[in-house]
Length: 460
Image (tube, rainbow, N blue to C red; front, side, top):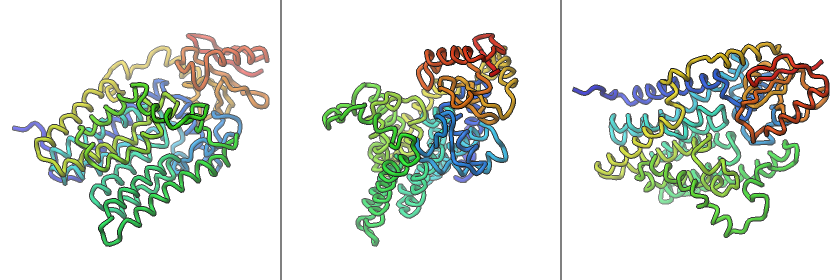
């Protein structure tokens, strides 16, 4: 007798899995916030922006600098749709829960398509692999980011494209232009694949080519006009991460794609997530724009399998797997599903989803209790300079800047620092924090508390 039999209705299976993973994501993300593991970069930044939107204001983010307009950093106006919800339920937890729900939504279209392709067992595997995929799990546990909107949009768009529903694929992909500036190139990739699929159809490749042109034009417009118009330096801050601060030659850019070897791990893990069979599907080409800028970048954070950067690739490689399953024999299909499931199972203990069943992850240590009490002594509406992790605990009720930033005007009313904060390089180097603390005390700030590596200063 079977211990578990997947539901015979695809809608029940898809939405059931999505609800289960949404609950898991929420538990992990909110508990990490409760434990003080969230950061100003990036949860605090996005909370300040959405808090401003919620009050009908421009997304000015003091954590990025005095008067910094966040649309000068990345182009993500779609996050403003969270403003009404934030207005009703203010706080960072609202962003984390919204991200959990959005990410889990990607399970639905892929599971339903897999059900059509191979039945309930295949759908169960694909749904579980999607929800437990390392890129999505890493993203939902790593603060909040605008790509929370991209993950479900990509899942629906790639599924529609795999089913040859070109209009639906185009409509699902177009909102990506409002998620982040680089995703316009992914929209262009959708357009090119639509044109290729429809080249012998009644309408021909023209609609797809138009979509591709819109995607490229949107990226060029946002990078060269929109972002510089809001940016305090009048440019796009991330060009230097592509050129490495110099003028790279075509040969050096080509060599950069495959070196250092950490990039091979990224490509191998993506291929394994697709069961290697997904590499036979044209849908895998949708990954090229994102992989292109990541591998060409001089920023090492983009090369590996950490942070949130791979979340947008998960629905694409898994859609490629489902697409390939529809055109292969059962033995190869089972082998590919086994490889993909094995990758998900092996990475669960590595990425934070396993924290749900770890008792120590749910305990409140004496230091954590003291940290909460210390932050609770700072009144609502105050101006505060804080270290990276402490800042994320205050952005919902205070005007927060980073402690390493030189203050504008009279300076913050409060300064709070955790000397054990591991964010010693970015956004605040340890030496910069120490220097600013000396300056604050030289200007008369008095020590209200100094215990267990936690320091609280108050302006006289």
